[in-house]
Length: 101
Length: 310
Image 1: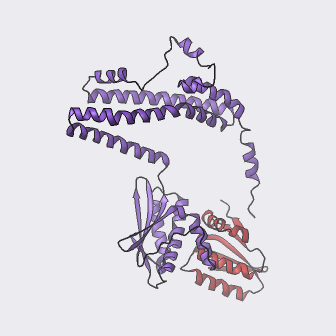
Image 2: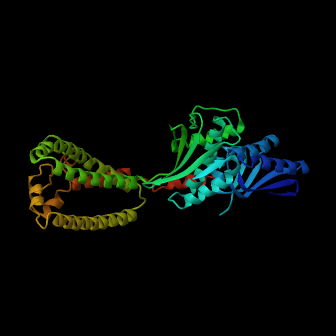
Image 3: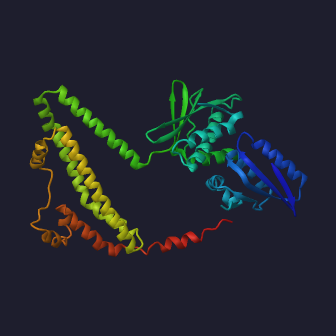
């Protein structure tokens, strides 16, 4: 997974599948990157994210809680991932930007 | 068949997706199947004790235009299909429940030979496909039943069966069909016309419909006559006598084309439906359409533009 810190924003480039098999390791990676840039605001880029399940949503929720009321952004979301976010009302918790076709 | 475990979740999803791509399942259905596969697996795992080596056999089942994923696992009986009232305090489980509740109508559970079997419906045959399958099955069954009865039962028994069972059932069925013809024609035409935005659409669709129906009528008539000539070895006297003696068939008799055209406008609202006068029913549908016609979808277009993704 790639990370980019710029102007106080830590962009997390989510990749592949975020599921029950790898959710813990992904969370650990993001935790480590956040600890290295504690004052940065997190921005999720889902351009290369193909799939997310309830386990993946739990990872996003953890960082949402840490943002303390601020709406985090997840951008370049594919249709399939958006459908899951919409079904579980994550679109109310986060700012979700669909990838341009 | 694939054995799904916690360690090969992603790989199994890819395999399942590749196999589903070879079927009639759409992209959206494949995405949904992958999601339900994982969520159901995790629910089964949790419900059956969270064993570290827990595994589920995943099979793809296809037939009659339908595509299913079947998950089978051994162990105690456990039905993973969520109930609508089920709740959870665990965050991950909350989202899992939301997903599984949203698609619970796509899943069935059965316990068989000590195995828990969950079937996820990935793709369903369209209603027109189902109708075609049922119709063909009924035709074949009817043909086979008729031939078997003709061979096995004697003449007197067959006649009694026809008189006591087959004819009354056929009479009831035909009455039910005839009862529906006029109202369905009336409502279908009004519904179809009100869903079109302007008269040009009506003209185009109407013309296509008339031409297609006429062509189908010619094809079906030629095919039926050809089949009858083949089956009855060129002797259609049986067919002619069936038409003459049939009491269920009725048709309005007109003296001339002029009479038929002038008869299109009914003198009351009940007789067209009572007397099965389809031309008069069509006239009434078009007459009443003028009172039902919509604004051409402008309202729907305005509402669609206001949707924004933040």
